[in-house]
Image 1 (tube, helix red, strand yellow):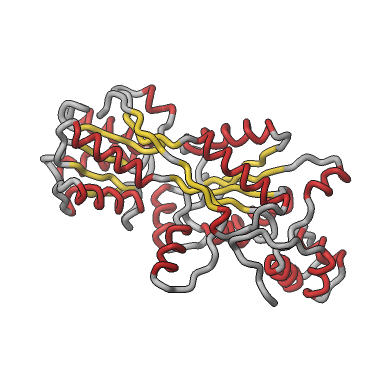
Image 2: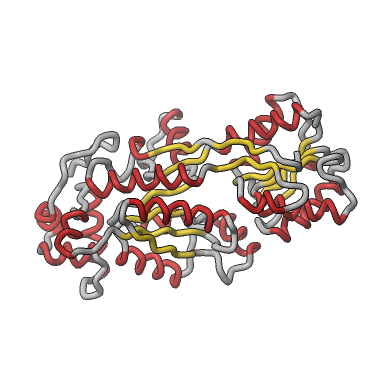
Amino acid sequence: MTRPRDDQAPARATIIDVARVAGVSRQTVTRSLNGMRDVSEATRQRVIEVAASLNYRPNRAAQHLVSGRTTTLGLVVDDLRNPYYPELAAALVQQAAERGWTVLVAEVGGAGVASGERSAAADRGPELPDAERAQLAELARQVDAVVGRNGADHGALQGAFAAIPFVSLGDQRAREHDDHAAAGESAAAPVAGVDIDFDDGIRQAIAHFTATGRRSIAMIDASAEPSGRRLAYRAFLAEHDLPWSEASETWADDTHQGGVAAALRCRDAFPEVDAVLVFNDVMAVGVLKGFARAGVRVPEDVAVIGIDGLDLGRFVTPELTSVAVDKRDLARLSLELLDGMMSGALPLTGPTVRRTVGVSLVVRESA
């Protein structure tokens, strides 16, 4: 069969089309897409694949008029103990409520898992335990669309929500898709999503360090494998003709405790350090504490900049300078995409369902 082009919204298929191509009844299509247990897994997967190939989506608006039910969104996050996710959830819930929508929040890969184990899982590649895959499948049965981010197994999210609109957050797969295209390689159409322009934020951070006379700039990452943020840090050091060595980089678990330990390692391995860029604000708060324990003054001896722009940065001493993500804008763009996808005005994948949120450097006391 011919798959619709990803860069335009194709004519909408009907449930009759899906039933005909899949060789099942209309009732089986409905039961398969709703995750009902009286349909075999093989049949359910065949129906989902056919529905995706035809770009079929149930008319949720019509269903809601009949049932009187409101639109329900799922929000999937890594770890609710990281204050980034509650701040994001608050922005999403508020804006969803303005549309008359409700939000269900699911934590996958976070609670009860040590941060070191999460980092190891991310290094091994996509994999989630069966229990968490079942949790995603159950969520898919309860919601009309999903927005989410899970670093350890992004592919599992796409697979679990193949039959409904899904928007990824802060994902880099669109860039990877563009790289494949530039190299003349084939690649799957990028999943719908909202990227965060961390490259520009890191550029702003390095420029701020240099403008205040800093030359020996270190980076504390959240994984042994270089993150996109660490790669951007290296690129912008070179752009400013600043020195780099392996000693100028270290990594730790993306927790407060990880930041404390990383600050001490950074100082020991790179004694001339006068500025540190930290993977996120949670770690950066730990870095402030680690330096304080070691008698290192911030910002007099070492300037520190975090990433995310969390509220907690205003309540530490010194107050944390940070590359801030506009979470309200992130929520707004996500909901606009989901609205268009649910109505059929937008496709489920492709470059027309990618958006980017900018960042800004919030200068406080630490740098």
